[in-house]
Image (cartoon, rainbow, N blue to C red):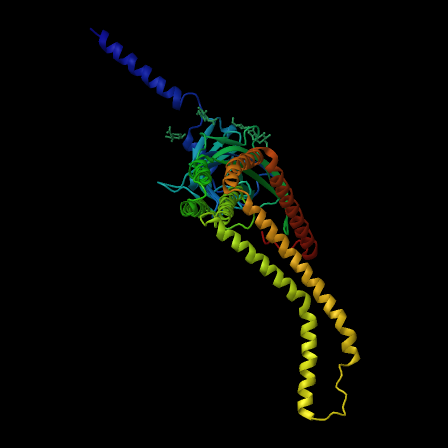
Length: 493
Ligand SMILES: *[C@@H]1O[C@H](CO)[C@@H](O)[C@H](O)[C@H]1NC(C)=O
Ligand SMILES: *[C@@H]1O[C@H](CO)[C@@H](O)[C@H](O)[C@H]1NC(C)=O
Ligand SMILES: *[C@@H]1O[C@H](CO)[C@@H](O)[C@H](O)[C@H]1NC(C)=O
Ligand SMILES: *[C@@H]1O[C@H](CO)[C@@H](O)[C@H](O)[C@H]1NC(C)=O
């Protein structure tokens, strides 16, 4: 009869005892007690927990949203983690039920923090939705762990010499803004200072590598620990191959059609050549438009300008063919007559060149004598040519003749060359062009792709990086000099 009631009672006692096992019976301090103890008034957030405080940093990369050539920067979403020990916050001695307690931003504001920031970011913000994305965990042994979720815009060293086969390096530098190496030592949290939460792939870039480095940097107020992470983004050049390289290649091949049209089709060939040149300019402009106006030669410039050169040369070939066929339609009699005309012209030219200096000089003196005779009407005065003039005359004339001869020789040589060219058939020129143009273009392609897709062109970039490091060293030396000069009183940092 009392059986069910007894069962009920024993169940209730068990329930109570199990509840007590968690909360009361095992004597451990619950969270409320610990939090009250931690945030008591005796904690001063301006005291450094130790000298120096060792802050270990690591980051988790969530997403990279853009890498921009025009503004030379990149946008990244990341979590940044910091760990340090604050003995004042240890609660081991209280015999806690839990070895760690999590808090939010409001508690963090009451504690000492190393005041770290990204010193080279163009823009940085902690995500605020729906509240400030800050996480704080206090371990029972006094270790603190903070985590911020941030959006950052950082600088990139854009070198477009290999564009579009380039890789770009982007940097973020993290340091304590307030505390120098005497107060806070920053270090990367080995062995995984940077973690990717997923593969980072943008439409035009992919993240291929990253590296971290910790350096001590000189400032007028002392030495600071700087943690720098660099991300290497490789451009995905598929788009440029499809939208730039293949169309221009096709345009150039089209310009060779002209060699097969024959020497009669000059208008059609001209149109083909000029259209190819225009198409090329258009394609070039299309790609160049979205790039900064750098003044060095990019890989795409080499490609496009060489393409234009090939089309220009095919137009020159057309001009040559046109020149050779100019008289082809005329009957041969006319041609012969023209040749005799040329010879007559040559002869008269020669005669003039040989006689003219003498003639001119003599004419001059004769004219002068006649005019003076007319003026004076006096026979006593001797109006002979002065002896200096006579002495000068042969020299001048000989000089004139040789220079004219030289000119004439040049003229003759060019004329002969042109005549010889005229003797070659236009078809022959077209035939050899149809062989040599594709051959030359293939050779160019071999060199181009060999150079830009191999490591050969990377040597240049490495040199640039060393140069920039040397610049940084020079800047540090200048800062050191400034520090010595100004003493240690100023703290502009
Ligand atoms: C924690 O302990 C305090 C006193 O020891 C008590 O007043 C409070 O109710 C406890 N809180 C919880 C959630 O158990
Ligand atoms: C925090 O404590 C809980 C138990 O209370 C444990 O499960 C968890 O792993 C701890 N977190 C860390 C980071 O140690
Ligand atoms: C404190 O505990 C955490 C988590 O268990 C650990 O990572 C950390 O190294 C400890 N700190 C010290 C100073 O022992
Ligand atoms: C990534 O960077 C490290 C160190 O800079 C280097 O040793 C490694 O070869 C790089 N990996 C790739 C795939 O480039």
